[in-house]
Image (cartoon, rainbow, N blue to C red; front, top):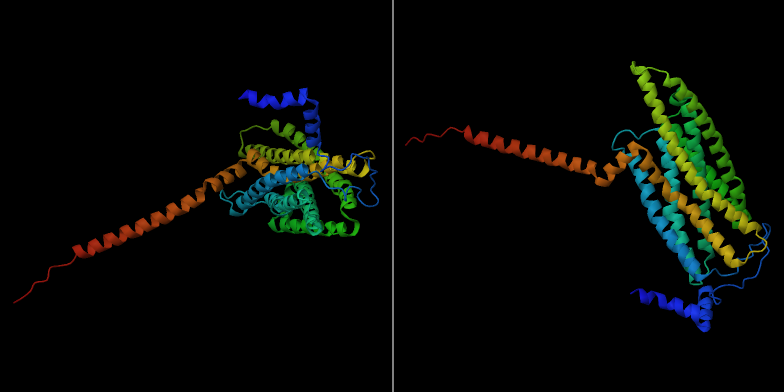
Amino acid sequence: MANSAVNPFVYALRLANFRKAFRSFLTCPACLPPLQSVKMSLIGKYPCSNVTAPTYLSFLTASCSTLITIVASLGNFLVILVVFLNPNKDLRSPFNYLVVNLSLADLIVGLITAPLGIAFHFFEGFGIPNRPLRKTMHVSFFISCTASLLSLSALALDRYVAITYPLFYRSKLNATRSLLVSAGVWTVSVLLSMIYFAVGYDKFRFVFANTAVVVTFAVLLFTNSKIFKFLRTQVRQWDNLHDSTEENLAKKQAIKWEKKITKTLVTVLMLFLACYFPSCICIYIINFCANCNCVFIHWVRDIQFVVMLTNSGVNPFVYALRLDNFRRAFKNILTCRACMRRVRSISLNLYQTSTSSTEGTSNTNTGRQPVEVLI
């Protein structure tokens, strides 16, 4: 069997005509544009817009988008479901409502943006132009990504206020205010994304990288540095507390839980940086690479698109791995324990009703006196 795999390499290494044919096929000169340098500029039309992307690249991007669609849709839908069903009765909190808002933005990526990307790249692979589909994909992409960034900022600010000003947080922040913040996030996301129609995709993508991403990064850096500084001070103070009183034990338990939530948020933020930082580099390459050919630019364009979408599929796994209450809720939903308890309860009620009915009939029959017939 191994012999069947090595023969093609023998032809490629030993026969010049096979080597040339392999090289021509792999580089696909019929599919690819000439490897000429193009002058990239932020001002003006994107120079590779009239150059078709390699067919294999379009289908590869569509395949990656399909995987992201499945993972992001199922994972984020599960997060939203467990918070609203709340099987363990411990997920209804302002922080978790903001988590739901982030999951909703990621769910839109899985249900709308990624499927539109699949359709667009399939059309591109078959050489069928589809400008309306591309515009719809771009708008949903910017709205969902902006909402994700703003939701991450809101989560970081929530943790900052909850840890540094706990009394103010408990008295002022409730479910209604969390929903108002979420509504504000979506309003700003939609309004900012409308700039796309005025300046076009490439300019707005560059503006997006230099405003939304940079501002979000600055907010996350500020809040997390303050949070860890405060937690370090609190831990030093509370390490000196004795475990003799219930109040001291409650304080230690509370700070332990806050640390766990904060570490979970930091993990989400690190994943955000791992996805958005390379994406920003790709945007800069597209706009400022002066000696790049269009094949390379198409690769960078699709990598930037896929990497930003990938961030929407990883957050649910962070909650499942880091937070015990989310993990228990996921387990209850996936194993359908609530459904089984409900079915068991209904079956028990039916059995008890049937038993009591049977006993009542039996008692009635037993209690009857024989009728004496007089002739």
